[in-house]
Length: 76
Image (cartoon, one colour):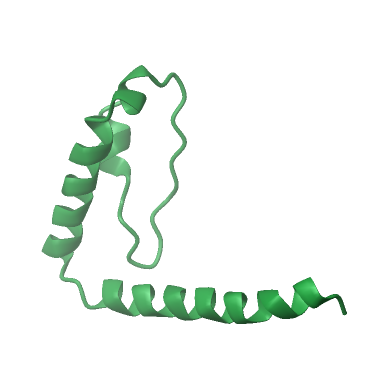
């Protein structure tokens, strides 16, 4: 096994732990809080100069309490 491979394992564990932590924090948000977060993110994203001049925008389907990008998509 290469030395670089050993260094990645703690990073992978840290990343997995961060994902678990964020998922748990999202799980306790009320639907109104999730909607408010999506609205704030959409306002921020759509106000950026890069968004305004972009000709292609990629989005995702929200899953497991993720912020729903529908509000951004609706403004395209």
